[in-house]
Length: 272
Image (tube, rainbow, N blue to C red; front, side, top):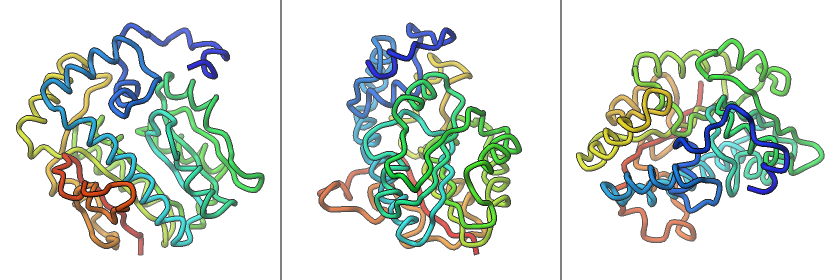
């Protein structure tokens, strides 16, 4: 936490109240969390121990999907609902494949932004790494600010990595995705994952978490069919909408993890 705290902690952050980004960081084994976050995270682990495994597989899905898009020719990425900087962030993966990659991160969580200012730094002298401080529901503002770094006449990799779970109403979530995809040209991609509601133990853990977190940090799982519907009109990249650990797994990273019942599904789709 030293690099971030040396720049001052934002006055409007309550470090005694659990924060979803810091809880996720705790589940991933990170150090950017506090006792309140650890207590909230442990409460979920007590009901659903598999949450930590899911967190790790979610990170690996992000890495693999960004690498796929970059290797497919995408040079621009709009990472919406960024979450905490961690190992192998979007700009690091993309710029490793193509040094000129341009990445715009979007988040409005002051905790996330404090870390972003300190840690989301460009890895090359020809690429761009920047962030937009905005609620992703304010689509016009996000796109307007992103235009300062991205060319919306060329393909963009639009990423919603778990962030839509904070939108309780599914129709609203669907409209958000379609609005962003309408704004990008042919050849762009949507990369998305989300929790699914098929596991009763996980549903109970999520209900307990939401009761403690309140509306500001609540998280809502979808049906597999709803996640698939987000990709309507797009050309799904093989193997389609699947459990995260089954999407083009890297044996060196996942090992035998393909058989784990990860409570999240995702996919990558290309706009024709």
